[in-house]
Image 1 (cartoon, rainbow over the protein chains, first blue to last red):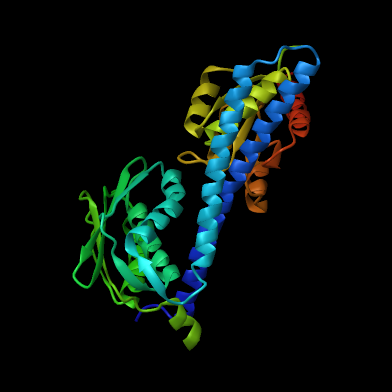
Image 2 (cartoon, rainbow over the protein chains, first blue to last red):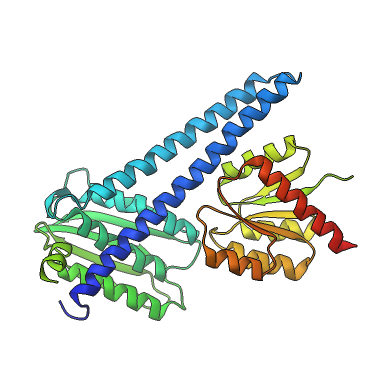
Length: 234
Length: 127
């Protein structure tokens, strides 16, 4: 692979790991803050009841329901964080492309939300088996999302479609393009392409101003190892 | 003494609702919005003593909102609220005129004490 040293590739992997754990722990901190306020609100109402204000069962029920929703949301973030942490357990494993795509969509949703964008994705009913590093595959898909998000204007939507292709899987990212994002997009796109090619795949892109962005990423069923390669040879 | 008027701004809608309810229970005239843009619209048409503002929000971020608030209403006090403390953000906020920088979750009694202190500063500034 040209254009990026092994050390830089390794650093980009660490940088990705940091970005995802920061984002998920930030969202978890928000859930904890909400739970603090909702349980505090229950305490306030119970205190007021002790002072003679009648307790409204409907209000209590409403708050308990809100607590339940946040617990469910927080559990989701913990699951994401745990799965993500485990993705470096083995340098190579049997993977399912649709499942990995869904994980990365889950991780990337907040980055899209910060741009007031929506993410949608579709995957085929039939599994697409792959073999490789779960961490690397998540990394490369995240970088593709990152490049596509950086190209799109605020308040728009990005769609990702996964389909089986001969010898592997094809991921297509499509969305509108902002008129003023040229250099930033090229840098991010170059990194995504570098990683895709490092795993033995190809990335075709069309990001002309005024036309929708279209990144078409093909990855082979048997993925080359990016991170293991960087660790072993440095 | 008039009620302290507080505007809570955070993209976590549930947090805004819960905080507004708790501040109202404690005698404050609290209101909430979920974007920086909405906050600036409310501030344009209504008077608030203190704004409790999330730093990281989609669209118009907290630091930009402080700048706008201070341009329009130099006496209005802003308390920054964040999920994770960042010394850099805290310093930037203070340089822009923020009254205080707090990390979530905040003990409600501590928050009320800080909101009242900010309200006093706002009142003194208006005189």
